Length: 184
View (cartoon, helix red, strand yellow):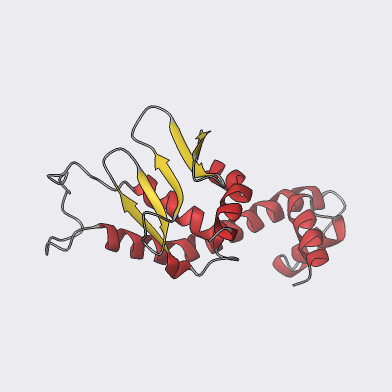
């Protein structure tokens, strides 16, 4: 899909034109669509497209989450439904850390082969590394305290701290993560 098509579709999804709404209303409802009804159908169309996009994202993330969760979980023969206990070394990879690593992967997927990006948890932070090499950090996640931080190395390998309120804020750090990827 061409960039211009993406912009047009994005605009239609956020604020659908009357013709766009009428097209889908006619497909979904056999009766004639009146002047009054396109306003109702506009809201329905927006919700429908939001649900579709959400379902597509969930459909793509579920297998990745299962893979990452399976890698993070020790192979002890326990059933995944049983309650997990904290390992003796005090390192526990949380679901939030796994999701953050998936966000980092999604940001870097255009520049880096996803097989090169690895999650390695430690007691004080969770590292996301190139080639599972601690000398090639992409970022460090500090999610154990009251505030959440993502530290990203600069060109001198000094980590710059970035406070985030929610995991989605990691997407806003995409440019910095891409700079790290280009340096590898």
